[in-house]
Image 1 (tube, rainbow, N blue to C red):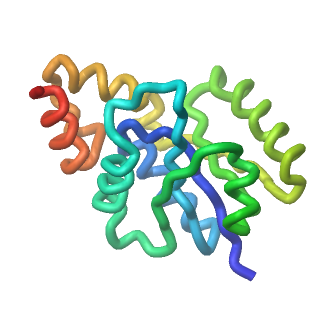
Image 2: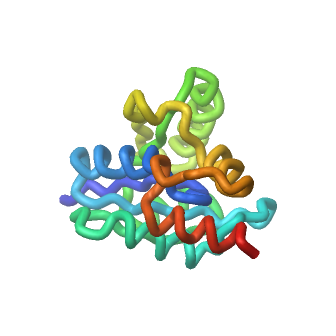
Image 3: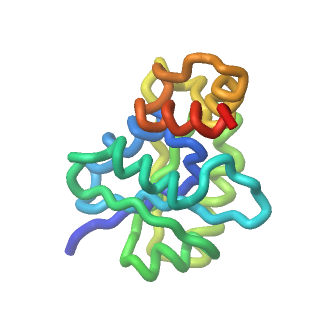
Length: 160
């Protein structure tokens, strides 16, 4: 039986930190679904379709990775996709409390769903989508933080 994992997030935008977690995660499972969460209470910078297209560009050639969107409960999405693992990245100790609560809730909702936590590469521990958006918004160079296609998309959005 193939082991399927889900790496959920908003990925608004996808950063090199996310890419690092994805590339390391796929070594642990047979199939990884990078799942863009649709959250109606948030106003994303990039559309869901744009985020998925950018992910597919950035991850081209990475075997076993699928990019999709989902709404509703992660536990339900996992069950519908035969996933038994959730991958989450932890940049700092401050991330742990929230992630720990989410992992416990997901296990309560889907008792076969395990969460694994990965820490990013040392040079990316500070990196977050919100910081990348802020730098891009003010015309800063984000090329060392994101894939070139993502940098281009951000430049286009903020040029308007």
